[in-house]
Length: 126
Image (cartoon, rainbow, N blue to C red):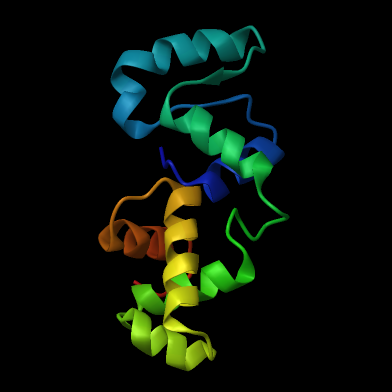
């Protein structure tokens, strides 16, 4: 149902052999059930990518470094790059680099995407 790699990773560690997003359920659910009956894995599209990310992560912290997580968290809380730099004792250029690398790792395209990621992954309270 969720394309959150933490949720998919937890599902796989709990023994799931497949994952169907809610948006794909109508057209793929029967196929997924058939695969499950045959004990075959079933992943499609975003769920496949999220499952792969779940196992590429460092422990349970996700794909971001601690510093990248900190920068994303502060940005999601509404701080501008300059304020983030001040709060973390970093240069503005370093904050911009961490922000860009986090977006690249997560394949996100905007600040709104970063905020959504932070909320979905419990980096901040909604």
